[in-house]
Length: 138
Image (cartoon, rainbow, N blue to C red):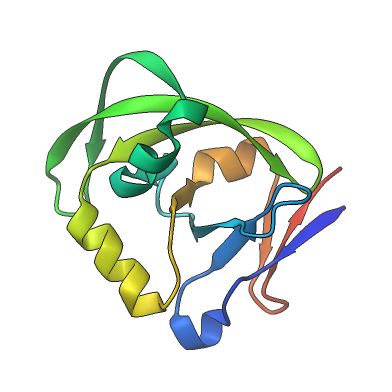
């Protein structure tokens, strides 16, 4: 079973963040793990930096925020290597750069986006807040 330690102490920052690193990748990508979000979200300012590694998914996609407002977004897919396993991941691209940048500034590290509950369930992730890690079956 693979394990990913929380990037920051969740008891201090209040949220579980993880770092996903490809082999040989010195600078991984940091993600908020959010069981309250069904979808994976990629922040727009990050998308513009990595869009050549993404494949667009046809169609119109909507996301409803906590405030109930509907936002139309594009959907993209890519492959992330997580604990040595290649995983195809789809993301909705959220272009609310100001809020995303503010969150990164408040946390003190760049946040790429959100890993949502559907992805975690599909890949059988187990979140252990006591140990501050995510267990991922082989």
